[in-house]
Length: 311
Image 1 (spheres, helix red, strand yellow):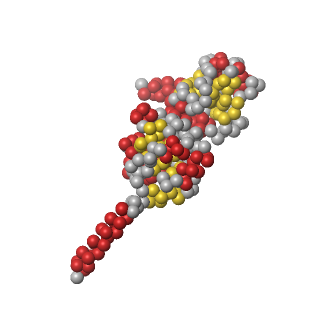
Image 2: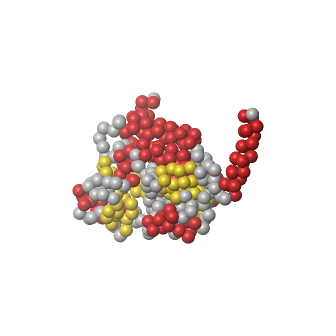
Image 3: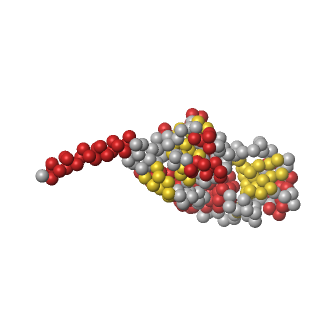
């Protein structure tokens, strides 16, 4: 009797499923609270627009590159992302028309995506817009990986990647504990006509300095600010860190042209460290590796000690 009842109900279930599918309702819909605190309902994740170099890098690390149909201009790793996907422009200068013209089924975006009016339009559209959390700490990077994995339904791959990255940060912390004398570093975002824009507290560069065991010479300022000529002598950085590729604006002049730092230990001893922008400031899966590379450039004596110990 129970068997006949089950057989009677089953066709009804299939009919309901067919009706839902014909109405465009995805049975796999799920809701997730994104980095802005919004509850976002998602279904189809087959056509992803990825906005933010860290977001794109994580998606590729999760083996979801084939789902990405478009990226922004900061998505420069892996090279395949910028070379084979549609490009919607710089993440802070998006246009709603340009984004929606790519016909995505899901938009996954970094917190910095903008401008705000465009983001508001995208959030109000029928395309699910998910903002990724942005805590620039080892725990935050790992949480970001798990979050994106959950959004696309790749929890197992996300957990494996998260554990690898946690191990990378553990190695970094062990190396950082061996620093006996902290160096002062200054991050230069750009240089125009001898004047520099530098990174204070609350910036990605400041967070990276902490990971690499360096003191931010511009810690008394907040955000990215122009460096006054008279402040250069007081800052006296041991090293200047800058990027190979600026994120926006006109090309930067050489760091050696910064008038305010002409007498600093960094410029006198040519302690200028140049790193790829996304690698250094992206806070993606390679974050710990980038911090170790920066640490090695700041503290070459640590690498020599490790080499001696290995012998």
